[in-house]
Length: 394
Image 1 (cartoon, rainbow, N blue to C red):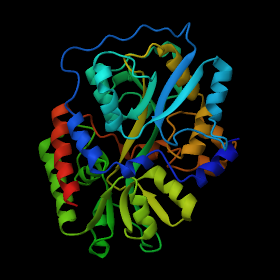
Image 2: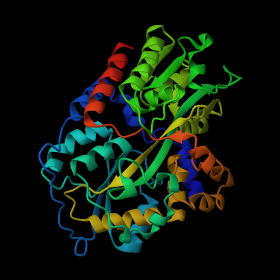
Image 3: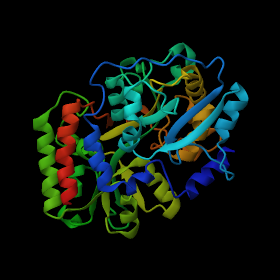
Image 4: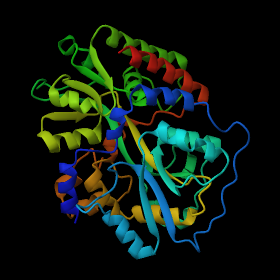
């Protein structure tokens, strides 16, 4: 089964962030509008748990972010239902962090059921939900497999001790290049500004990844104590490279089309994309974490405040933290599993897959990546607006 899933993953045309390509300026504008919404007056009360009598679960997630067979079924979910008796409605409802939040924020503020008992969202958005009281505290006694969570992800600043969230999948932002056009390769973000690459460089429209890499190049600890001065210095660098024509495009997942067409020869990019791109179109691109470090993001399970099936959600999370199950998912999605032991489980099936540092990074690789620290609401508005002003002018 896992071999079949690997083959399907390599044929797939859509990955976890594919829908970001069409989000455009409207999603960016929504991002600004959504930053200040919610949490103004007290926090809603969590719903009563009816899991003992209601063996169902609604799971909202991104597109192509779970194992799927040729019939459109999800093998690991089928097995979960067989083992637990819990029927899962898997809903591909998340096309972007901000657009999803925009659809449910009013219900969240009232403590209402949003139609999802667990949702997978990115670190910074999870931080917002926690800050506003829109998530339920997890009972770790119901998730004993949480002992398999990789140590580097156990205590993020947006959720100390993982009281409200548990990682689903993750990835790196780093640099990539066309190995035929740039046989000597690249090592740093600074290398993207070489005059030989003028007009052939792309960067991501995800602010935390593009700005995070530039700040790291400037010697800033993006997970630590920094503020306006450090961010402004990085914004000035990006603005200069856009205005002088060094950067050709600022895009979401559609940057892959620019790499394929060779409109761009190098880019700030996402790790899983390059794995899939090479599988689809030949081993022509190389990904690297820059010498100054890359960013590390995760999408995380959380239980919305209005869900009446929290224990069912915890049972699901526990299941996906079984190493064999995590390995099966990783074989399809080509992103980082947070589960210790999944690499060994994958090695028994496909040794090459288990050695891929972009899917099963070791501690040395993880030490080179940094989580962009959680921003306050005011910082999020300010920094996103500054970044957006460059994006709109690109």
